[in-house]
Length: 218
Image (cartoon, rainbow, N blue to C red; front, side, top):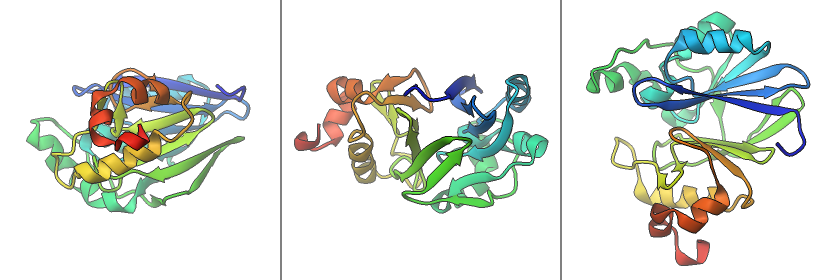
């Protein structure tokens, strides 16, 4: 992508089919795991098999299906975990979230690193930017750079994130989508569930985007 040494490997995990991503700079071998949602041993084997040095875990938000494998991955690699401060209560409530779906969950200590709006993230020779995008969750962020956006549960192919969960906000999601969809049209969107898409495609055909965004922003 973008002629860089970026490689991204996706993994569909758990009963809610959540997308975890291993972001790699092949030039240096440095990597970050984004949203390890479930199947920790599988993700650990994949990281080790990829021949990379895991540097961090990046969490777009703290709904249980995106954090269920944080504990085993962090324990195995001893890396820092990044999350926006506004989602710390959700992270702490991970076991209770999972129990509401009748699913097991291994809790973990609170993430020690905080994402903030506009923060730059270095990964080997790669550079990304954090955008605070509340609506689906109060501390939701997306991470963009090198022609991709790791969109979490803000934007999907043909859909958008739910706002009927605790702390959700339809108005905030609309404002967040407006910012995401202002990225270059060719930007590849890697969502937290479902297939990849592009900013251009979602601006053109996503009915939920058309409903939420002002006509002047479409």
